Length: 291
Image 1 (cartoon, rainbow, N blue to C red):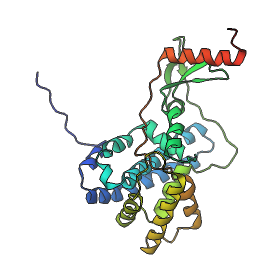
Image 2 (cartoon, rainbow, N blue to C red; image 1 turned 90 degrees about the vertical axis):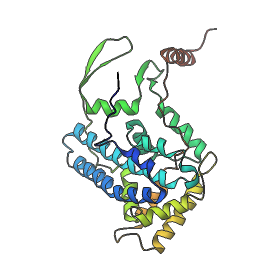
Image 3 (tube, rainbow, N blue to C red; image 1 turned 45 degrees about the horizontal axis):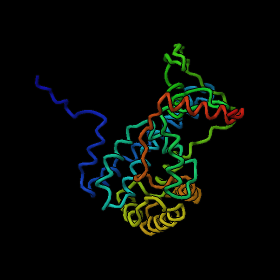
Image 4 (cartoon, one colour; image 1 turned 90 degrees about the horizontal axis):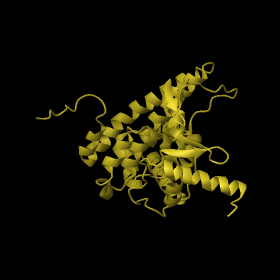
């Protein structure tokens, strides 16, 4: 039987970025960044208006973070040295559609990593498909990052370790504190204000960050140095808009994660046997192994 090839038409076509020349790729990304940025800002603005509906507010805030994370993924394509990007662009573009990968980028906007090796250690627990929860790891749970996303988003049937099905009723948590803009949204706002979402801004980003490949021992100080050089060039080329402030500069230094084009973000499968062995280890470590 002859298989009919599915037409590559409609959405989810970001893989076409991989087929573009370096110059065309920068131009195409520059065209899309303001569109993604507007989407992220729209979700965040709507979330902030729904303080009396915490579940819906959290869902929209999550959408804002994932949209903003798409920008960080595209900027990692831009930051990767041109001589090395050919072997990495497919992997990076695939992250554009991965909920877990986007949420990892968003999470890392809140964390500090001293170098790429430290970043890999921080990312590893976020990649596990299942993990243990509770004081002694008594509960086997799905990936908490994805579970928090989907349990707020969907009414669904779920099951615990014994296989008993239960209904998940999506809920949010009422907060009496002012809504805080997610760090990843702050980062992309700062990038826009500093003029990075133009062809010229992306060209500057590519040339400055392309001088150093972040592989293992490259540090936060290296990233700060390149950010400083990039900002100086953006200013020299009069690219920041009138809204740019020192606060935007500070956000880039504090919350733009180290490049992750050499960091594996694929989910890590964990077998039931491994989880039960870890449960036993944690239990006996707590109560004392009698052997």
